[in-house]
Length: 342
Image (cartoon, rainbow, N blue to C red; front, top):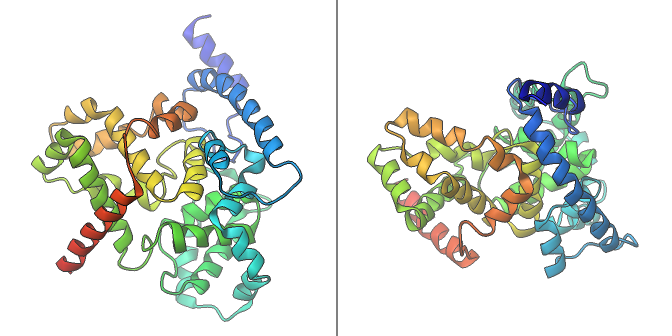
């Protein structure tokens, strides 16, 4: 079969809208995706059988070496919400606070908060059919509720751009407002402290930590960045603030989030380091600031990131040793330096 015929045939078989409601982009490689997905489907089927055995009986999912191994190999979509809720502690919080979410929505609102959220609603996933005003039901209302409740719950954060994308993904996976709220609380309140506070100190700190890790593991890339005076925030801030949403393919983001909920924010460094290390030669060919920025965009596309199962194996091997002790030590020193700068 000629390449053009193969592409036509793949286009006919692969739906234009993915299982989560996102329209495929105009330059989507249907043939490559079909080839990948036929292999991945076999893996998904095997994992689904193993997860069904593990979750049989409907008992609580508890963190363990087995669960960690299973999570790293991917949680099937039908079990994802339940496992995320369990391993992140969101389920425990929801059980301990019955009715709390609904009370937040019924309480006295803040016009400033409401306006900030409304402004971003139409900008959230314009390429997702479920978030369009014409959709029935339209998920914009659900998104508004989750973000408003969270802003009332955590008034130190309120609402910050980027949270709309994260809450949107949570809604698509859980199909449940209250669960999405508690998972957002797990991320913003515990897993990613200070990422979304007004000063964004946690976010700035982690970008500096990544810069330090690149200096240690890929000194040539660090030298290129320093030589051109490129601040890391210029190329990686959206990776961190959006947790790779709208950066990497949906299925890959969900596989990263599986581990993020179970193992914490260290996973974000593993992903970032793997992307940079895998494309180190390509990045080092950059000759100017715009060229560097463009190459950092390009490394988040293509088969390496689409083939999520292989990609996830790589993030646990490519960056080498990365202990939480190292991350904590680097966070403490970089945070102190940022505070000293004022």
